[in-house]
Length: 565
Image (cartoon, rainbow, N blue to C red; front, side, top):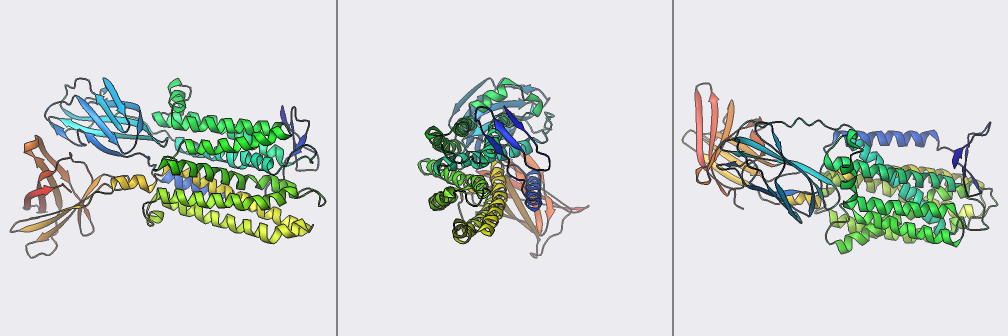
């Protein structure tokens, strides 16, 4: 049994762990300023998460029929092709009349999914809603629109947004990281530095580590359920649905969380008993922690995986040893001045190796995820990475102060240096927590290597002209989170900019049996544009630009447009 007590006139409590025979004091609360710093920074991160779009990590690169296609006959099947292997989750076809149909059969191999459709009798626009799990363990969802006979109004499924699910996912992941890196990392640090062995004084950090390990275990179970809800795009009310847990358990995320739970269980065993057995359990728990991180996630599946997965393992182990040292060191520095400081001495010898592994593995993973240097500020993933690197630099600076300025003085018995080191370590705890909060945001941001797959096509240019006017068309390739876009500039006969009230662009291909697709353009500075341009994947199109100059004056420009690279 674990219980909390309180002594009159003291702000400290104690925790008694049944079977341990020891009573551990809870360390003093952090000063108000660091607590306010944590609260303020986490609030900003929550605001960033809540206001930013959430990106998936696998990309749909081709469909058959193509998005927006108008077909003369109902298709017998639909195929979806992704840039990496995916696992199918849920598919639903919404007819123009609002009926929801399930696919008659499904075939899946790697990144290719083929769906055999039931007989379709209605004319008009159909929407296939799909949801899969990408190779890095993140759910991906989207819709494919195609029409039979002619395009029409699109029926709505009426699904409501599930408020708070993304916030819960982020908080649960942050709690898992706290349990793994602060809790389990502290257990591994004690094991490697020989803290907590028989004959050594009781370690006041033991109960704090115990609480963090238990927090991590609870967060792992919570994360598993939340992942199942997110994968199936369900609300909190479906928590008890067996399918939610089955989907989670059979994914790479389920494997990673199972390894994390096993590592935390070993850490709990290492805390529960002293002696040589605890040291072996702590080291094995550290190895399992690295395996858990390498089992799933966008960093682990980056090619080549023979390099990325070991790099993730090494990075996780190094981070755990570094961050896990903070609580045991703070506890050791709170002991009387005459107490043994062997843990601090061993840490000073150990930490250079951990930091070397951290920097080497971190550099490898960064190179694998970024396609170009500009990705650091031009993508959401890069901006999170920049913020993380800034905080890591601050953490390294604080660590250098401790190691090179304060450690020699502490080992010489100077009490002011002890107090200064405790304050610096508490500040390092705050900075480390903010780093973990940033890392948890990567759950919602795709690495640039994924984004680049939808950005490699070149822009397409075309020019239409008549005796009255001319038009320059520029079709941009799919960009981050968007489809193709069309930019249009209009000129009068004397090549001066042409003012217009309305502009429509009509795409047609009679040879392919596609009726004209008429799209309205919106005015922008210096021209007109059509965003999210969804056209069937055909190499050639007949294009007509309709320009309403005034209520009595309309200009039509016709020509051909080639979308071939």
